[in-house]
Amino acid sequence: MKKILVASIALAFVLTGCNTVKGVGQDVSKAGDAVSKTAEKTSQEIRNN
Image 1 (cartoon, rainbow, N blue to C red):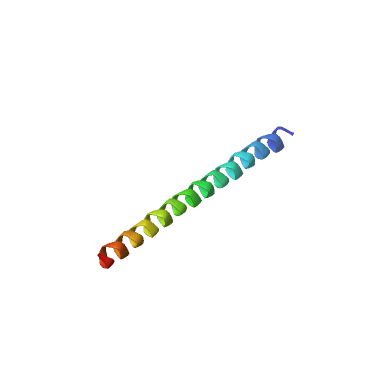
Image 2: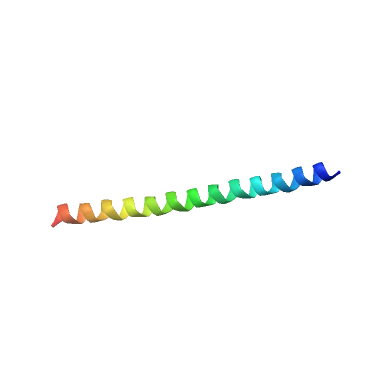
């Protein structure tokens, strides 16, 4: 019974960690997209002036 409990707790930590890493990856990706879009807009403004 203790082995099942320990395995369940370990699995919960692993799954939580995966979700956290996935969320951080998505946040970093969105931040990168925002920076890229800003750089493109700035580049176009410089070309137009």
